[in-house]
Image: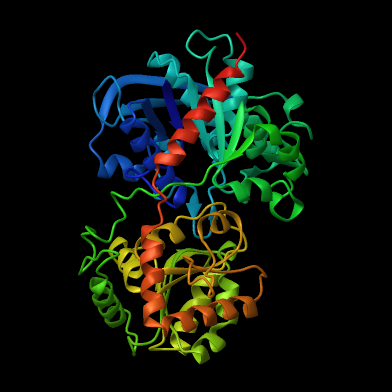
Length: 483
């Protein structure tokens, strides 16, 4: 099967979040089972600076209404099956950030990703690629299924191509002013409530949900949740219409990258059978974070500073968590409001709370290894990779029972002495505090805590299962293509 994964980001080339981890790992795992698969991404400024790419000498020209843009095609390496194709257009993608700055999105994002979506299909024609499936990811590639069905269905390279559209986070839909419809190259007849119109706005995500042959999202529970009003962000009705074509597949974790047995970022490696190295990691993390007492339970957070991640619960619980007797170390960046809020909180509880704004790979690995518990009190969580990494490193998650967190964490049962984390349901500070209290109780029982760490580390969330499920969805999508 010839597979093309269209994505706005992917490791190792460029990353802002979990989408990059997922697409990069999926590419690797599909290649390991001998599938013919490549990525296609925009050529951002950072990629061309940090990676040695090869010119193809070919380009694509894309007309979007009155705007015409040309993009040069680059390869990750010269071969008949490169890992990645890149579309260069410096006027659109030669910028320091992918989607915008911390002060807001780029105002021309509609043009940027309409261009990218159409350029992906033009790339197939120019490079003589006949993909069986184009796997589209999030709103930045959501116009591809529409363009394919309406403009390229009779093209000799694309007439048999199917699409799978994966929702990584329904909260980000690609919403633009109605006037930006002109940049899609589509007529006004597509700007209706049955098309791309959404309460007077242009909605890119709707294109993928309407026109893709199949739809997937990144956990089974999230696939169910997004069909209700609470989690559907206004698209629950459309998703219910397509529920027979909607599937949930839990993300895997790339264990070659995340494994405390061999992790070169750690000052001391460890295994489920011998976790002494984890104690050494905690000691060094405590010192590096400027925390006062390494004997206290240490709670970690690594992620985006946004309301989705439940940060208000952590902040509103700060005084009670200090009273319970825990230390906290946090790493991330995002909304200025939360960055300032937690920076002030660290100043208020100096020696007990450490907040690190930004992202540092070595510190992220050390937090996953050196903490006792990992906080994920999310409002919603499509899948989440943080809890999967934390469990692999024997850092027990304390998380809200939603989305992929519900699918991947087994709530601790005291009577059975079994579980891989502590879950709570209500989105309230008291519910989070109760879960932390349960965790601290187990922390004080060394035998139970050691068993829980081992059980978490032995949990298997490798990509072997998800890859098989994606291949089955690709085959189902192909069966929906006429002829």
